[in-house]
Structures are given as structure tokens and as C-alpha cells.
Image (tube, rainbow, N blue to C red):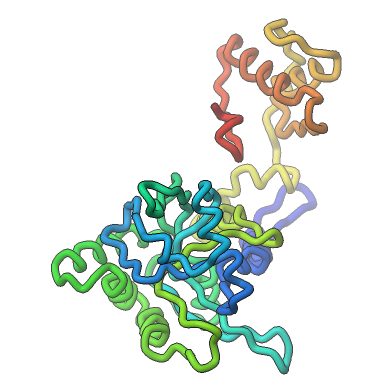
Length: 326
């Protein structure tokens, strides 16, 4: 807990709470109901065995059992995910109804396109991630690991690829065995998915690897927030006094605000836009600039960057989309 003035905030507990809330909201993205209607947004990859984990991968159109995803893939499908190997769980909506869900162990974002009559699945930017529902399962059952799974995932996948190359059993088995070495319970769950899937109570038998998209009610971006909250939670656990920018939320002392900069007329601005640029360049801890589309926010950002450059100020510019950065 840190304290400035009269405020004291238990940041580890606050961050953990927010991560759990986002996990509950974003978990629906990865919980794939084993029902025919649900295949509107996900599909088995029948017969698919990844030869390598870096991608891209090619499969026949028939590998997708979802007619809707087949159709969308023919014109190009973005914002999709590939995941596997999968495990299952029963989910109770109420005391009388139980739903069978198919959940990937690891996943990564991909785009899907048609090439020479086949489907080409192409990785997009970020690498493989551990499914948040698996992390949630381990926490709920108090299963501890020496290091967080997302921190050792790259090493585990390297072990899996090496093992697959040596014994020729395929990457699906190799990934399962790599995780089993670290968390035996994960190996048991994946074994159960392969050997004891309740086919008599399911509308179809899914494949170990799947392709899925977000439904309108899901938040695909929750995966990034979950990862960020996880990193922040570990930082606060190992160095609780190092709260960084969180200090702004509890009245932490900040650097003195400078006099308003004279804004160079590099970008044409109205009075409100100029005031926003001046306020930002004056060194206030936080400046929020809000407005509808077309009101000139981009011009304000461009003016801030150019005026900062002209004043030899360093700027770290980030965005949640590539277009803004480019």
C-alpha cells in the first residue's frame, strides 16, 4: 500500500480486482459452446496438425466445418484467432442447464485468406498467448507455477517444437507434454479432452485446433488488457513502492507545471485547440482531449508532436491502432 497525503490505495488488490472483472467479461471470447448455432463464430480445423508454430499455415476449405466462416474466409477474414490444443468444461447457466464448452490452451491472432483454392492462415503481430480461462482455472484451484505461464510460454513452445522434430509425434502431442512438465494438471485436462470427450452429450466432436472470431457481445481487445494487468500485478507484487503513473490517481507529487508554451503556427488551430496544445506542453501530469469525429483531435496531436520536436522535447506516442501511428 502506498500513501500520499490523506489517500492510501492498496494497488495490488485494486489491480487484481480489475483483472478479474475484465477476465469475466473477456472470457466469453475463448469459451466456445459445442453447439451447431455457435459455429457461426468458430470452427474446428478438421485434420489440422501444425507443422510449426510460427505460421503461416494452409488448410483445405473442407477443414472448416462452419459454413459462415468458410464464406467469410473466401473474401478475407481479419480479427480471427487460431487456438489449441483444446480442453473442455461444463458451464452451468442455472441449476437445470449445463453447457459444454471447448477452450484453447494457447491462441494467437490471425487473418485468413484464400490462396490457390486453399485457406491460408497468417499470424498477425503478437505471438502465442496462454488462454485467460486456463490462468483463471489454475488460480481457482490454487495451482501454483514457479513462473507465470505467459513468461515461460516461449520456452515451452520451443521445447515442444524440438520434441516434435525428434520423435515425429506432431506438435499437438509435443505441446501437451511440454505443459505437462510444468503443470501436470494441464496435461491431464488435455488428455481427457482427447480420450474422454463426452461425444454422446455433444452435437459434434470438435478438433484439437480451432479457428474463432469474436461475437458482437465479446471483447477481443480484452486479451491485451488482461496481459497488461497481469504484468502490472506482478510488478506491484515484486516492487510495491514502484507504482509509476498510478501515483497520479492518489495525489502523488508531480513535477511543477511550466508556463504555457507559445505554440508555433505549424498546424492551423482554433483557440480551443491551441489551448489544448499549450496545456499539454506545459507539463501537466494528465491532459484529456475529447471530442466527436471531425472536431480536430488529430490536428491537436500533430501540433503537440511538432511543437515538442521544435522545443527539443522527447515524446512517446502510442495508439491502439496502426493507422494513427503511421
